[in-house]
Length: 64
Image (cartoon, rainbow, N blue to C red; front, side, top):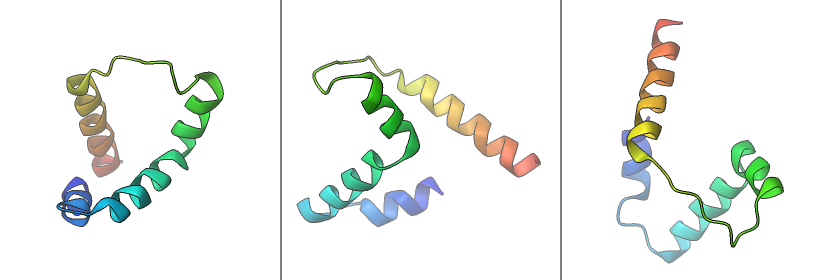
């Protein structure tokens, strides 16, 4: 799935990027985050932890 996303958005121009950001901000997690936080707020992001969470979710789906 991530490879599909990567292929779709690789080398995309500014219009495609705006389209992606519009999609991302319309997802449930982002809508919830926007309710709780101001755009000026900053949060650190642990990419290794996020990667592990996503891999775990994928494994659950494959096994489930």
